[in-house]
Length: 259
Figure (cartoon, rainbow, N blue to C red):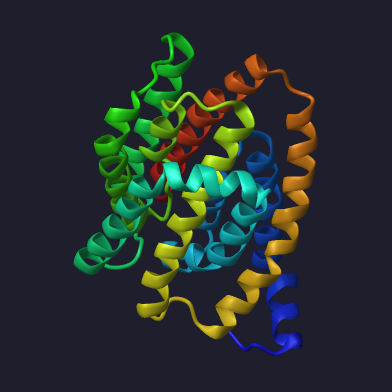
């Protein structure tokens, strides 16, 4: 892709470009409501019209900056980050080691496993009583959950399992949980961005298009956040877990359609 303005506009005004803008708006709205879903929704839909590695490259800037925004204010974010430091170290290590071994995101059969895990966890969360990890258990479960999340992200471009179940087990309040997910996803995106840059999937042209796609993603987030503010904690939890089931079902269905 050329980095000139005319070339970028031509890309975004093409049928694929218009569909991509709509996808990022929808994905941003989902993220605004439940705190996650932008990479999952966007990867699943974009993979219908482009290779998974290219879709993951387009996600880098919108996914990173929307999570920076969602993590604000930084006074609270630093406190959460200190608690999640071990997990985030595991995320980076898991992403880089897996990518070194198998390359950039390719989806394939991993999409079935990830989609199934999302559905199973969402259903379990709705039916079972939530359990909270002790602070002592966090010290060793966190790095393991992070490493597994990084490995799955390197293969699929999606970084919600097992990060989200782990974060939910910490007993955080609604806004703290959303902020913790934003911090985790932000670091996951940065680690994946290093992989894509080194593999040449993140060219200057792709980076320019990715930067422009931040605008529809943010617009969607604003809409979603306004919806979230109107939800009670109980309704939010149901929406949160229900969205995991829907996202998982979508991942499995989209992968089945792609064959």
